[in-house]
Amino acid sequence: DTSIFQSVDEKYMYLKKRFPKIKSHVYDLIMHLDGVRAVSTNPTLLQIIKKLTNSSLLLDGTQLRINDRDNDRLIPFHQEINNTFSNQCITAWIPLVDLTIEKGALRFVPKSHKQGYVKHSQIDGYPAMDESYVDPSKVEYACLNKGDALVFHRYLYHASTPNQD
Image (spheres, rainbow, N blue to C red):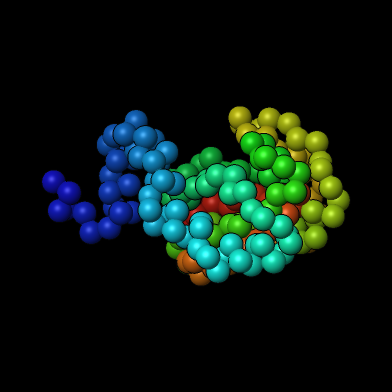
């Protein structure tokens, strides 16, 4: 009975707790929702990216991450090096909810993209860089409102943080 849920979040947590295989399938499908596609192809956003890159765009896919309180699969520091079409890629990171440090804002190192590509290895099945490249004193957090965008070069050092809210 879906009427017992007041929000998508409640439905997601219910599936996660009671039917994890179905939750995983739903997780894979969420990125194809028309609302997610509308955010990722927003004409204003695309115009800004075109202006930054001074070229036509190839939208190379949408990734979606749900960072609920129980998510223990944090993504370590990395660069967007896998599954990209070109070395001339940028990322638009757009939270679908308001984010604070407690709620799992993206960690990043400003200007780290200027260091170029850093060798990655597999950490918990995810390509990640050795954190010795990361100066902890330079790490910042992208505390954004839903719908805001952080646009960055594929070589920017960035990582997820836990949702402790």
